[in-house]
Amino acid sequence: MKLVSACLAGCHCRYDHGSLEHEAVLALICEGRAVPVCPEQMGGLTTPRLPAEIIGGTGEDVLDGRARVVNSAGDDVTAQFLAGAREALRMAQAVGATEAILKERSPSCGSAAIYDGTFSGVRVPGEGVTAALLRRHGIRVTSEESLAHRTGDC
Ligand code: SF4
Image (cartoon, protein in one colour):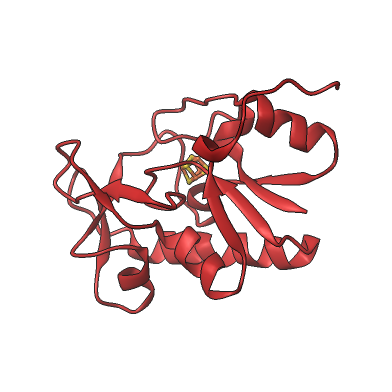
């Protein structure tokens, strides 16, 4: 079983109320092989919401208290991001997920790259808070960019 980012499955849970609809992710859900989660909503943030970025490090650093997550108005939303990561982990463990396919570059879900905390579109290597927590618990995390595009039968 896999976890997938809910926004990749067409849920309008992104900060701007948008969604993405990745066909291969939808196919996994249709086949009963994946469960969608949105850590930011599960952590208590509203939709729509202001965009947020990690300041001073990566998701690993946030887990260890060395970095914070801040939105574009300067509000500290670290607690909500940590809560959402814990909820996503709980769901992963509940369904026996061994893998997660999450939205690249998100401060929660990014697995190889995130934004640098300046809200200027600069990408840096690193992972989001949820991706980091899942990996700490032995779950393999990749992104939609690793999936071949295909259409499901359902
Ligand atoms: S990238 Fe993750 S946290 Fe952001 S909207 Fe998608 S599922 Fe939710």
